[in-house]
Length: 493
Image 1 (cartoon, helix red, strand yellow):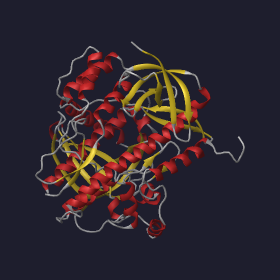
Image 2 (cartoon, helix red, strand yellow):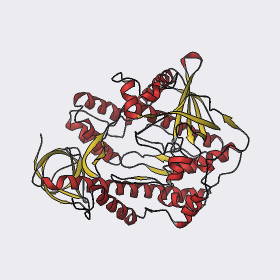
Image 3 (cartoon, one colour):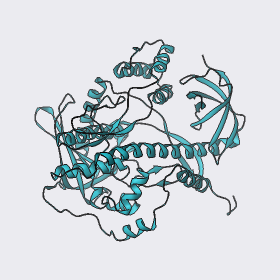
Image 4 (cartoon, helix red, strand yellow):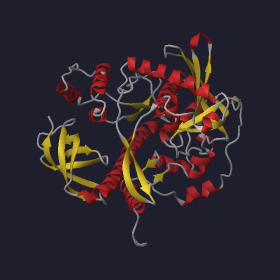
């Protein structure tokens, strides 16, 4: 490769930058933001009453191997009757990012960090998100703590929220920790290096599984879609590999869902509004019913999360290899979640997929603006103050955050498609087995593996619908636009 040719990473980074601008997202920080960030030289220090000192607890973070924007820590304390007190510490980002400052303005515009295959576009400058507002290992940090008592049967019997100073004792990674929890590998070095942390994580894992059992009993959907991660060799894209769920990821997921529920209920109790994360009853339930019928199963004519989850579990057991494809088809038909203003006393719309009524986003303020909004509302509630946002402002923010999240998803998806097109370009004419992931007037889409990629069916798409398996042939790629075109060869029985 000559030196004046862009590498795979460089080419994809340019595509990502252009896609950000096209979708109304800011890929770069303004001069005003850079000027503000230059004035911030250290992490926030405790000030005011009611801040607890919890540095002595065995806090640890669990995230991706390469994550530095650490939003949460967890710790557990056994209590009477087999119950466990779970503490979730969330980075106090608001302590350094004040409402309506230039940094806040950038975050408010984008509303989320954008994670593309070639480059991350952080919502906050990395001096904050990966350092001064990150719950980094070995660093004392201010945090908002969600405390909840989880009974042996998985019920949350008590909860509280308060401010605290915390200290991350170990930065743990999902894959290594999951292998240890599942008994297939020894304890990661950082886990073994902190006395008592191994037993601490066992307690957390047991409590998380209890929480999960309760949610599933209420109808929470156990879906398993395949996310992909790029593999680069010397900045040249080599592959796109599935990034699968594991026990450590589920532990954090279960605690964050519970913490988000605690946040929503706390704000309701204190008489403050909140931005709820909702997923309404699916509009394409009839197609989900038809999809189940194709497998010999019967679902009720009216949407029923518990019945859908039971069907999914049967299919997982019967066809584990094909379950991610089925999950993806169901996700497409469930539709997207959205943000909505919840005023005190209103009936909550709830989240169909999680089978919960009270749910907000509050656990990732370094990465999502709705979580920073929730943090400011919580701090107002703790101080006995009125909400820092009006109802009209929150309504507009809910709509804006939903739209920008959708735009960020489209950017990430476009760059993934460009990455896949880059890998597939040398394989023109090759055939792949795939599953239909979208079918509408806008087009028919299919996902294939080896590499994991999604493309449009431009020939032979007539009669295809979501969830059907089909054999396709690659007929065209356009890396710049992320286009991958297939022709249907035949459908699978």
